[in-house]
Amino acid sequence: MIEVLLSSPMLTIQDSGRTGWRHLGIPRCGMMDDLALRQGNLLLGNDEGAAALEVTSAPVLLRFLHDSAIVLMGADMQASILEPDLANTRQQRLLTGFVYLLRAGECLRLNAAKTPGQRAMLMVRGGIDVPVVLGSRSTDIMNGFGGLQGQALRAGDKIPVGEHSNTPLPLKTGVRQHSWNHTLRVLNGPDFTRFDQTSCQALFEKSWMVTAQSNRMGLRLQGDSLRPHEPADQPSHRLLSIGVLPGLIQVPPDGQPILLAADAQTTGGYPAIASIISADLWQLAYMTGGTRVRFARISLAEAHGLARHQQLQMLRLRDALRLRGEAA
Image 1 (tube, rainbow, N blue to C red):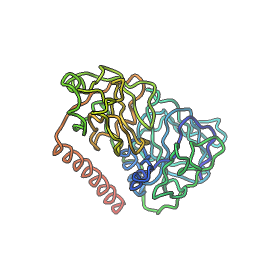
Image 2: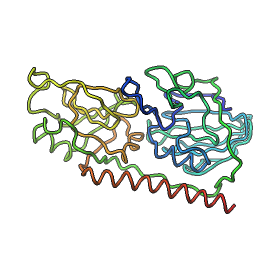
Image 3: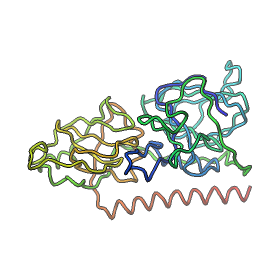
Image 4: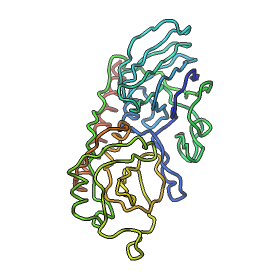
C-alpha cells in the first residue's frame, strides 16, 4: 500500500491502455510513455503493462507502508528517499532506470523536473492493484472511471499494490531509456492531398511550437497556417466525422495543427494531414509548452520496420533480465 501525503495536478494511475472499446466512444488512455512503462516493469519482474503512476508535476510525496521496490523512468524529478519521520534523506537523487528498495514507512519525494511539464513514470514491484475496468486499470479522467475512483490522485489516497514473486531483482543493473529529440516521424494522413503544396511543405520544413493549451488529450501546435485547397466548411468539401487515434495530426479551421495524444477522443471531423508512427508516440510525454517540434515523413515499410525493431529491443531486454535472474 502507498499513501499519498502530497499530490500535484494530474498524478494518475496508468497502464498500457484500454484497447478494443473505441467503437463505443471509450479512449485508450494509458501511460504517455508506454515504452518507459514496459522497461521499468521488466526491471521489477512485473508484467510489461502493469499499472504504475504517471507524474506530470511536483512536488509529490508518497509513503510506502510495506517494503517495496521501485523504478523511476522519464523526466528526472530529482527524487529522493526520506526516513519515516521525513527529517532525513536516506538516499540522494535516485537515477532513472534503476531499481531502488524502500523500507516500510519510508517516503519517496519527487521534485520538479528540469523542464516543467515533462512526465515521469513510477513503477512499483507488484504493480498498482486497482480494479480492472474494461480491460485496463488506466485512469480515464474525462469519463470518470478506472484508476482510483476515476480521478487524479489526491493527498490522503491509499494506493493498493499487487502481490509479486520473490525472484531476485537486478539492483545494480539499469536500463538506458530512449532519448527524446522532438523530431516525430509521420505518415501521410487520409486528408493529406486536401492541403495545398505550400501547407504540405511547411509541415515538414518548418518547426512547430507546442502551446500551453496542451494536455493528455492533445497537443496544440503553433506555426505556419495549414490550408486545404478548398475550405472544409464548403458544402461540396465538408468532411464527415471519422474514427481517430492517438498520433493523428488534425487541422482545425484556424490552420494550427492538433496532435492527438493518449486521452484523445474517438471521432473527429477536422481534416487529418498526417499521423505519427507508433514507434515515436512515447515522445509526446516530454513535449511541453514552448517545445519546438519537427516532422519527418517516412514510408509505411519504414514505420513497420521501426515498430519491429522497438519490439525486438524489448524482447532482448526481457531475455537478458530473465537470464540474469536465473544466474543469481
